[in-house]
Image (cartoon, rainbow, N blue to C red; front, side, top):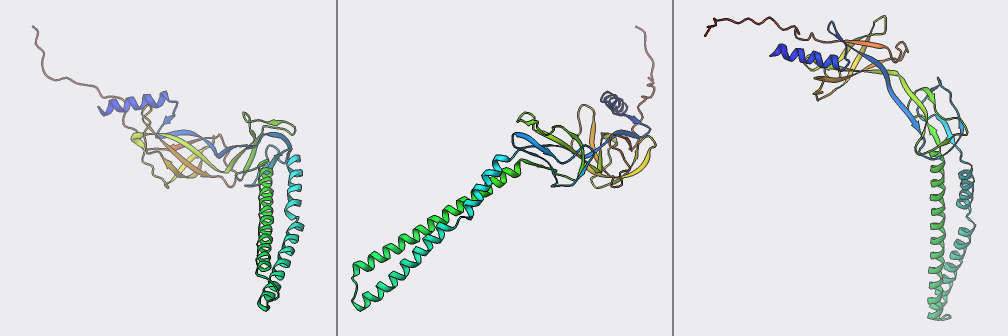
Length: 284
């Protein structure tokens, strides 16, 4: 039964395109991260700051959409936020009413002012306080509006999410970015690489965090790798387990797309032994 299972496993591996040879399996080296940087806003590309092949850092401005209208709106909002003339006016009115109330209170104590005048003065102070509060609330709303416009402008600026290399520029200045085609630039991370292997379930002895050695490229140069992920499930069709290995490429010595090989435990013998029958047969 073990031999039959081994044969079936090998057939599944060959059908899936996995190369298994001499205790090794092969895969291809891939960028550690491959990101299509898209715009969250619609609009026309106003400028590009990078070209294919440029190295970029996380947060670097790559490109931007036209923001002329928003910039003009931002200036209006900034002027409105910094306009404190009305606030100064209502605060001065409040101070005046407070001083008037204090004087009337002294006059009431001396019997030179009526209670009605005192009540009227207190009411005027409350009105002045309400006006100050109202103007401050308006300024707070204008500040929030300013922040909203600044956020909208920032969304029109396309920044790199990672340290990497620009490999494709999909839009030129003047082209429109639509909801159905929002990708502007592709950035890949190459200082680290990865390789995903489909390891036969019977030979998968890898654990997360384990250091392994890979043979990379046509010269099969030895490179150290770190097992980042071992799938907790087995693919039922191919009877394999997905294993992801990270390779350090800070020196740029490994090229993405190169073949690589990972040594695995030997598979069980796949040639079934001859079957012998014992005993005698009787002719009837």
